[in-house]
Image 1 (tube, rainbow, N blue to C red):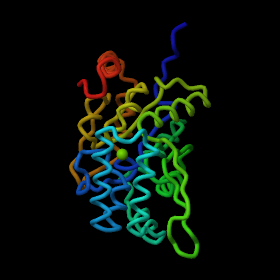
Image 2 (image 1 turned 60 degrees about the vertical axis):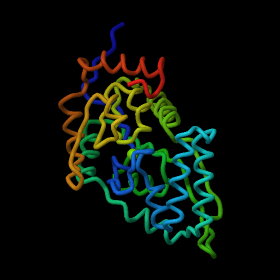
Image 3 (image 1 turned 90 degrees about the vertical axis):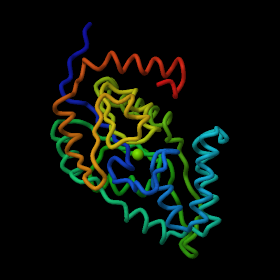
Length: 264
Ligand SMILES: [Mg+2]
């Protein structure tokens, strides 16, 4: 039986940092996706930032068994350099929403789309966005628990919400709602968003790293300081579903599976 043609995405999945929130271009050296992990290390001290940079090199050399182990190591560095709840809260509250994100999410909702945030970053930041934008679902990677007396790290909860983990979460949410991922949209900016972009019917690279642009259905490039999320809402309105590009996207996804992530 032929699939029912869906004219508006059933779920809009959004990456958090650099997508829902603006990124700090100053700290994006292309090694990994820009995130508040680096923002936090930068705020703690130059030595903390230097050590955090080393972990990115180790990550790219494949020296961590997975994302959770990378986070554990980075948390050890945060703690070593004296992270406190005060500094953490300051960083989380300093990140600015992408202009017109509220209006765009309201438009998704008006069109009966379910909204979901998926982030490899901090739960506190995802909470901020979820509360403000009334997003339906959110997955993030690290929740810090601070000691009420000392303000230092007491404990943490880690979830493997990197590229593969993001796709797993998307499948879970789509299945829960009885929705095919082909009828969904993903919006992201990082090189770790390629997997999620390839998993849905229509993907948008929003002011993105080059790796993601190669795989996305639609590329939106805006100059730094002129970011505007209404372009995402417009692209969904005008281009979804995009059947023409689907065959090319499928070919790229297949090549990536066969030859590896750096094939194109
Ligand atoms: Mg991002």
